[in-house]
Amino acid sequence: VTIRATIKLPEGFKLRDDIVVSLYSDAWGTRMRRLWQRNTSVSLDMESGNMALSAWVPGLAPAFKELGTIQADTDVELTLEPGYQASIEFVDAPGKGIPGVEVKAQYTEPRLQGIYQAEQTSDSSGRTIFEDLVKRPLRFRVVAEGFQRVEAEHVLRAGQTLKWPLEPAFPVSGQVVSARDRAPLEGVEFGMLMRTVGPRPMTWGGGRGILIGRTDDDGRFDIRTLNEKYVYYGWVHKPGYASVPFGPYQGRMDDLKIALIPVEPFPLNLLAHR
Image (tube, rainbow, N blue to C red; front, top):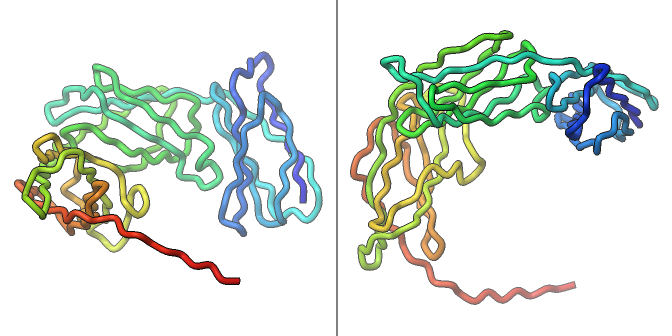
């Protein structure tokens, strides 16, 4: 079927950015996204199913409209309205603001996921400001050097300043050397997979995890963004060496010793048969 969608904007609103649109299907369990080049109508092709149309443009709040099961070509209108502003203040245990906190936020509602995504860094007072909001749950991923990495959901109200205390991170430190001659290895990457202690596992960043650190010129590493509540599994990777999984680890880990085995390239002959 073809859905001919028109996005209605407030009178006098100056469209300076592309409109992000998403067609969500419960049957397919996926979303189709595209950018509109400063246009307010487009046709979207998709097989019939229980669907919803979502849209967002900077300066207005994201919105969606339930379409239900569509059996024939359909015309749809979706109106975008101004959102509101709210802020988060990240503080340490004594209540002092934490500058440089990196925050990623997106709505947990499936019909809004991928439509609105915000990335902010806290200022010198520990404050971040989020705009174009609607009153729905947002999932935040928070990273700050020296503090525990955390992921949590909040609903921010209009004009609210949420005070968010961060806990000091436990240190993970040590050295990576070559298994051949015990020489320190510089630039070794650490990718970390995270799993909760409870029955519901979570992973970050796919198969290799997220990059959380590299070794210095003496092969040493000192990672200070991990959360003591989680069990961690990780990967140590450097080109020319075999990647090494490590873990599970939980809590403080000092003076870890990791030896990587050099690998030699070998010829590979491929034969193709019809």
